[in-house]
Length: 254
Image 1 (cartoon, rainbow, N blue to C red):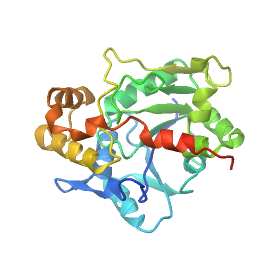
Image 2: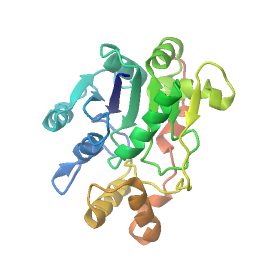
Image 3: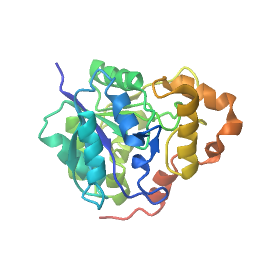
Image 4: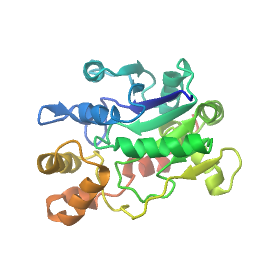
């Protein structure tokens, strides 16, 4: 049986909304909500929070411990390096990459992407090669050998900050031959729906979902509620992948 681990990145610093993963809704931090949802995955007994050495990081570590999740502290900006060293000693076959600014990540969706990766022995599998799922439901599954190859070869700051761009742009999905890849498709296009947290408006949107629907629904129920109640969600106008695009525009060689 394959050794599959889930790594979620979490840090204190955030340009647009500092300490966002520590913000609380009904007595639970966004990080706790995120981790508790991840634990419902078939692979939820093997989660590691990949964090940093920033001031205040002990609060992230405390939350991880309280939920029964391991943690690793690594480089703040070279997140690829942080992921690599988080996984290295655990000798995984596949690594699931999620991010803690997606508190409503759907564990069933995680399992579907993992199943596709394992069944077809893919180097890279995700639901973001075609962006048809809501922003905030991003799941990537990376074969260990692909992560290690990327860690060794890629030098661009942008690629290392965002972990997987080197793998994606050199994958079979884009006609390249370094990494065998596939996308988990969605039957419907929810590309315009936003449920990630980068701005204060995003946090209020998550609070609105929690108050109305609770913390345990699947991604589609949340997404449909947003679509049907757009007047309650001022964050829906924010551009998807804004931070990623800003980083790409300022890309430099390390």
